[in-house]
Image 1 (cartoon, rainbow, N blue to C red):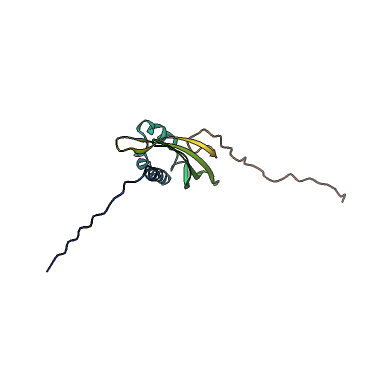
Image 2: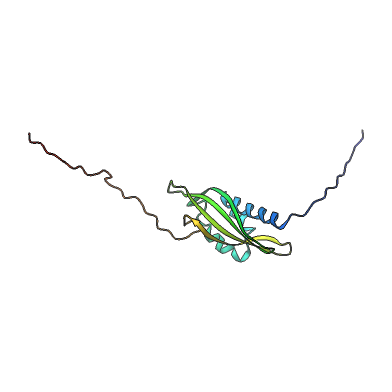
Length: 156
């Protein structure tokens, strides 16, 4: 019986700054879509984690994320990037699907230059996804019929 061992050497090209940014953006936003805040927090800057947690507190409890989409890269430098992310979402006590775009600011930090999320701001669309205060109008209950009006009254 003979054993054949093979050893292949592969050249691994380091990922570009843009490639690493894309990976980080995708990882965070897919994680929060599916309620995995602990995974997302690994890519959030330490000084921003408390704010991130507050902004996403209702996600998975009062708010459900239906879809997330990368909408564009607004700014990219060696150390900072601004990314637009669009979310389709709804409140669990409503049936209305809403859309919101969020502007995320990312920075390269640490010895390895990893991209971390430092800030999220509402860019456009429906308000309330990031914990902003909103007033929710509840429909009035009661008689929803139009009043009847008699145009011509006949005598018996």
